[in-house]
Image (cartoon, rainbow, N blue to C red; front, side):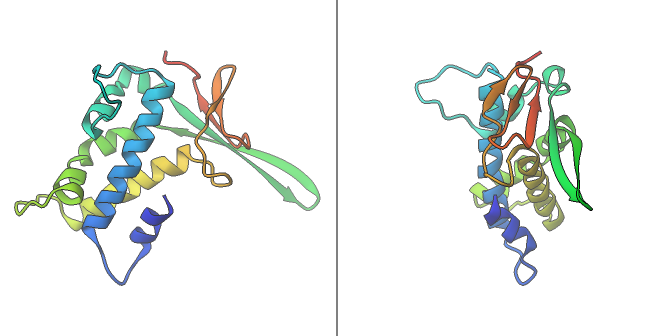
Length: 168
């Protein structure tokens, strides 16, 4: 996640291939996590490795519309602890990523002379992937919400809660 963030921030050199590749790898891992905890149906095969397309296509809108992450932050303003919660829906970002997913193969994984992906598209793919990671990955521990707690999954520190705990 940090490597992608640094590649996106580097103003001295825009490396399309690095951004696309790192975005694709990160996105694949995030989608694998979501398909695993929500037990989405994937084709049966000997190895448990799935393509980015298979993973993202498995996240059907009828289920995805219910998935949200709640981030909890505690601030200490003038001696008073204040808890704030921010809700993040996953569907809008994943819908955007579905449209940009071709960039990973066209730019990040395979050399293609007939590239239809602009630098802006590559940058957007990287930023959207990073945004999904920021929603799902705890900044403090670097971990995904892995503990099932009633109606949600929670991160180790409890700062991220992913609802619902099961596919609706």
